[in-house]
Image 1 (cartoon, one colour):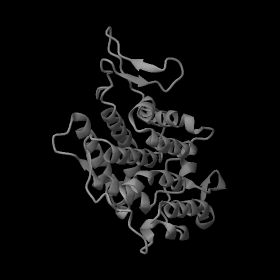
Image 2 (spheres, rainbow, N blue to C red):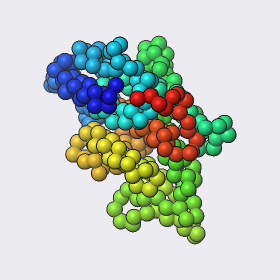
Image 3 (cartoon, rainbow, N blue to C red):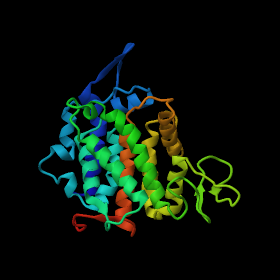
Length: 297
């Protein structure tokens, strides 16, 4: 399947969902909601996870037997799939999301068995997250609380991965290495820098994301991250793509510090983690290898 056709299908899904779903949410006065999950995230409502099937779903790859399964798409297409799936997620988490996450975990595997503490930590967290995503929703504690648990786990997975691919500059515990520097997210000094007088720690996931985009990955992949930032910004009222990493940092900090309820952001962060893993598998010599045939079109 051509990439333009994949984009067209997801664009049609996003455009048609409001008229097909006709979902109404009662909180105080009745409110008609075009995109339930986006509405839940922007309004601080943790219970909006619409899983009902609607006529719109027939354009999803998982529902169309005449097209390739998501697992049969080429690695280059799977890398980019996170972007339209984040837009589709304004409506709900679909079977295409779940299949994308499963395939990203299944196909992107460690190169060799020795690993590092960074990589081992990421694999453990991703394994737990993968189990939660596949748990039956009403048959176990994990299943009934998968959204809550996923929100806590996914940030740890992403942070471990960002430190792994930034390992020339930062240790796993957040200390900068000699000669290391990490771009700051906030205005002022441009970089966190190493100090011989006392350890310099970087705890900002937003700064790590900015560092990876500007200093670590290929310039052409930076353009893909810009497209992803546009999708993230849609989930925070008044934010633009330049504020997207700050939005992610605020989500993470608000959750970990007990200031915010766990909402539906986990699917956005998981899409981002998959996007970064595919990039590393395709274009670096780190610890990733693609298990399936890279010649798929």
